[in-house]
Image 1 (cartoon, rainbow, N blue to C red):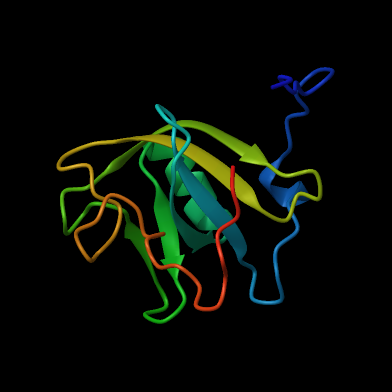
Image 2 (cartoon, rainbow, N blue to C red):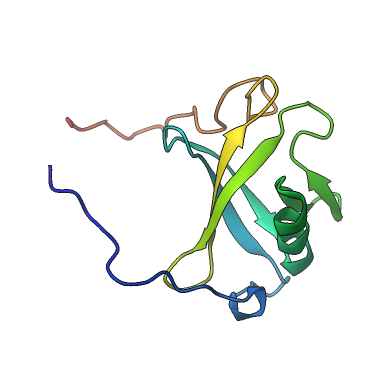
Length: 126
C-alpha cells in the first residue's frame, strides 16, 4: 500500500483562526497516538482549547451541562495530549493523546466510544 504524506510545512493556526459553529464550538476527534484508534469525539470552545494547551489534559465544553470538564477528572481516565491538529477547513480538531489511568475512553467502560455498528450496513472486504 502506498504511504501518503502531507507535503510542505505544518501551518500553525491561532485558535482565533479556527471556524467555530454558531454556538462557538468546534468538534474534536480524540485519537490514541500509539495505534491511531479513534476513541471519542467531544466539543471545545476557544477557552477549552486554551485550557487543554496549558494543562496538557483534554478539556471539553459540555453542551448539555454548559460547563467545562477535563476528561478523566471523575473516572481517572485522563488523556495526555501529544499533538493537536486542525483539518484543512479549520473546522474540526484532531487531538492525539496517550490514555492514562485505566485507559478507557468511554463512560460505558470500553476503550473506545465507537463500538456500535450501524444497522443495515454490510461490511465490505478489506
